[in-house]
Amino acid sequence: MFEKGEIVFYKNIGVCMVDGITRLDFALDPRQKYYVMRSIYKNGVNYVPVGGEVENIRSIISKEEAEALIDKIKDIEPEPILDLAVKQMTEVYEEKLNSGNPEDILDLLLSIDKKKEILYEEKKKFGAIDDSYLKKAIDMFYEETAAALGLKKEAMGKYIEERTGFTLTV
Image (tube, rainbow, N blue to C red; front, side):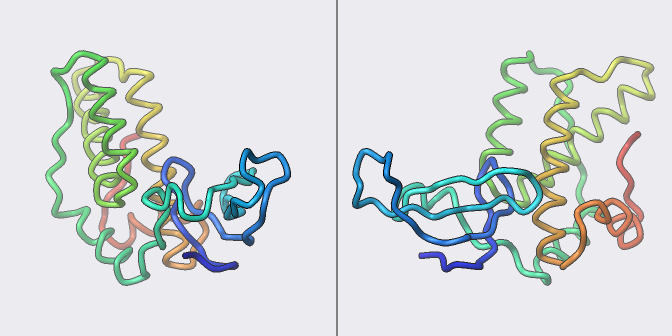
């Protein structure tokens, strides 16, 4: 069970603060308790049943885990998806993004960025679907690592570059 004030990662939403636990007047079961989850980096509040969907919520990674994950960037050999149909490519992207696992999200980010680099070198167009998933992966990865490190999300690109030498393909 999560406590008020705890910072958590809520799959597909990102980093949230547990603002409390409440009951909802409009719920099917008026006895059901809900976490009140406020997104740290986006507008909005989510109500998540206490005891339900718990696999979608976890504590954020520690500062040490964030640093170790960022340090791994220079050692990862990303495998861009260049030969799948759009539907299959989207399924792979969704699976990694929806896992909520920071390593999967980093892997997705790096593989799509590598694809962007390859296509740029070949003077080919980088697709809108790839661009959308790259932005989502960056957003989720930067949110969690920034929260873990006590940094602003906007500072993560520079932090990662200074720590690893890695920059995203522009």
